[in-house]
Image (cartoon, rainbow, N blue to C red):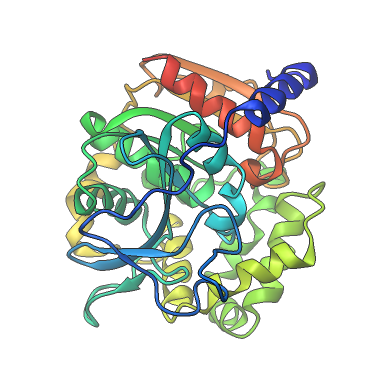
Length: 346
C-alpha cells in the first residue's frame, strides 16, 4: 500500500524534476490537429500540447505527445467518460521531465478520433481497444512502450500486454486484471458490486441508449460523482472534457462496449480470433504495478490477491489514498510513481 507519507514523497520527487524538453515535435507520419484545438497565439490550454493525428487502417487517431523525441515511450490511456487531457495533464509533464516520451491517444469514439470508413462496426469491445493500441504504435513506429491506464484505457493496456507482450515493456493497471471473462458474463456478482455497475444495465436498454444520446454531459457528471465520490473536480475541468462526448460515434461505441461485455451484443467479426484468445484469460507476463483507489465508487479497493494469479511476471500492488476511479487525475503523483516503479522492475 502507498502510505500518505510515501505519497507525499512521490509528489515531492515529481515536482522537483527539471522542466527540460516537455513537448516534442510530431513524427513524420503524424499531423497537427485542426484549427480550434489551440487558442490564439498557438499555445495549448494545458501541458500536453496540440492535438495531433495519425492513421491506422480503421481509425484517424487523435493524440498528444509530450517529452523528448528520443525518450523512453509511455502510452497513457484514458477511461470512460473521462478526458485524456484532464487525466494526464500532470502525469505526462512529470514523466517528460524524467526523460520519457509520452503518447496520449483518444480512444475510438472520443474527441477527434474518427473511423475512416462508414462500414466499420462501431465496436467498443475489449479486443478492439487492445488492437487499436498496437495499431497506434505501428502508425507512429513505436516498437515497444510502457502502457499505463485505467478503466477502458487500463483494459486496452491489459489486452495488448497479454496478447502482444513483445510490444510492452511494463504495465500500470488501475483496478488490476481488467480483461473481461465473457464466458461468465451472465454470472451475477455480489449485490454491492452490481450496484456500482448500474449504467451497464441502463445501456442494455433502448431507454439507456436514448438517455446517453440526449444527456451525454449530465450522465457523465453522474458517473464522475459516483465513481470518484471524494474528487472535487471543477466546472472548468468538466467543461474541458465535454467536447470529448460530441464525437459522432460516441453513443454507438459506448453502447456497444457495455452490451458486448454483458454478452448482449455480438462483436465485430474482425476481432473474433482475439476475443477467443481472451476467453482463456491470458496471463500478463510483463512487469506490472496494479493500483486501487481507496475511495473508488465502482470498484472497492482490495489487497490485490483476488487478481494476482494472471500476473506471472514481476508484480506489485498498491492502494492509493484519496483516489477514486479516475486515479491519475485525482492522484497524479502516485500514478507517476507507479509508472517509474513498473519501469524499474524490468
